[in-house]
Length: 74
Image 1: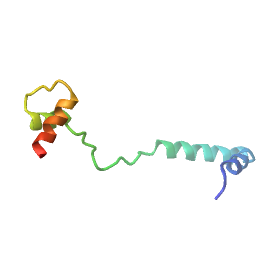
Image 2 (image 1 turned 90 degrees about the vertical axis):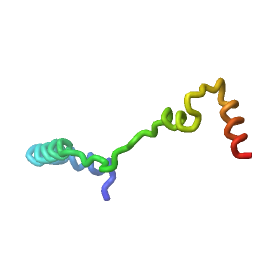
Image 3 (image 1 turned 90 degrees about the horizontal axis):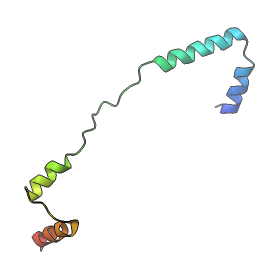
Image 4 (image 1 turned 135 degrees about the horizontal axis):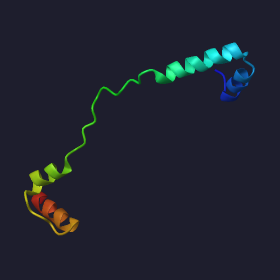
């Protein structure tokens, strides 16, 4: 495997015809469609989860939430 420096040096020594072939190849490659991730990323609906757990209650701070949840476990 060549290092980037070796590749750059080799490109500098290419004849103009070969350099243009390389440039065209790079352009074709960069225009090729990128393969997208086939699995959609679904963001969790935290508000729906909160409503499922706590209903419509509004709690004043996080400590109240922790106390309420801990109270259900013990």
